[in-house]
Image 1 (cartoon, rainbow, N blue to C red):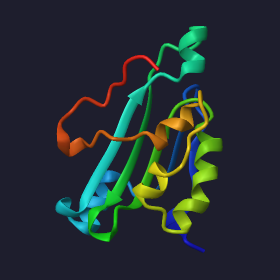
Image 2 (image 1 turned 45 degrees about the vertical axis):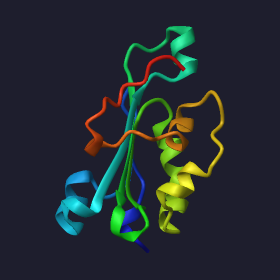
Image 3 (image 1 turned 90 degrees about the vertical axis):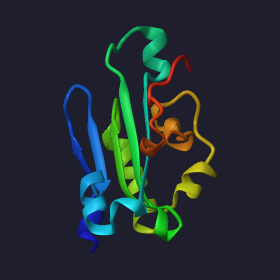
Image 4 (image 1 turned 135 degrees about the vertical axis):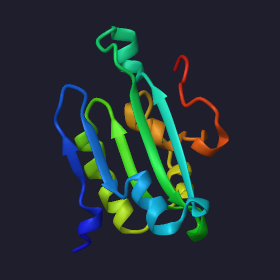
Length: 133
């Protein structure tokens, strides 16, 4: 059993889900030069059109650049985060890389699709805020 990859969810009005390492723990363990963080702040189309949610969602993948961008941490804040987190737990246990996420066709329009579209890195300094759908 890989206890470091047990999926966790906090069931609040805007759910939070996580698998693996936090950004801070990854930097501490592997060094800042070896970590790349991909992230996005967005509003899911289903919520945007229905005007059912005023809060933005957030996704983040913490990757190890020295190991083919293996995903060390998965973090999501948004509707149904628990279900999404559970689904990605298997991929994380199998050593998923950022390229694996990129090569996956996302289901449109869903919040989880955002994980297949991540391009903005924290190191770039660019805003993670998406506009429109």
